[in-house]
Length: 313
Image 1 (cartoon, rainbow, N blue to C red):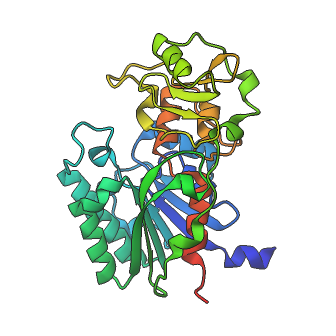
Image 2: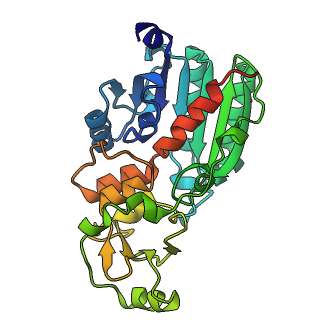
Image 3: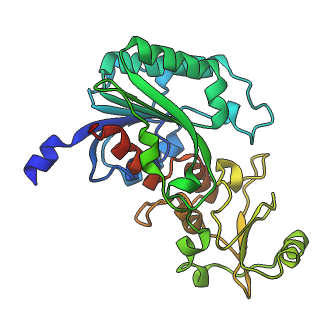
């Protein structure tokens, strides 16, 4: 056991959020530190992890102050590139500055492995180009791809950009090793369904149920995006807990179980992100959903780590 712990890689996360990515690496690598500037979100991270967390803006932090690690993961803010944003694609100077900050951390730390996650539109940004150029400058080999995580063990349709970079050896299509069968949203929350509150559906939800002939389904209560029981869920967004004007919602996603309409709890929604039930969610539902929606699904994070650290045969 001791030898196993000694050999465990050390890692850190930048823009750490609520620490959902880190859940997927438990038992695989040793978490040394995270960086998260939002104090409310940072409190959720600390509730779930015992490692060092810098509650700070990466732009204001001296890159020399971070401990050395073997692997760094970054999920820079995606709001300016998200399809949920009416100003999507409007890259800001802050986005570019954060990309340069990631470079400075890598330059100083010299980690052997690096991964990055963001929404697909980030791949067309100047920020992403800066990161790719700097990775080459620092001697990394890298590859990137936009993946739908529904094909990688996540019970949710979730298209995201992932980049993997190594110093130690060239990368040969590691993404191909991650593929798995589609997962049903229903199977993931089946044991929770009897405990979910019964609700009165909206008139639009009633019309959707008629359209699908009374089949078991899940539905975004406001956007009305719908999936049947044998399909992955639609994308879980960080904004689902509010109405777009900052007001909190009391209901977010509803489902029809074949007899009743029920509304999903934050715990049920967390399972769509493969977040284990041991994860402590905040009682504030809007904060909980922001953390959930911004996270990298835990199960995929573990697969990503396995793929990038696997020695080529």
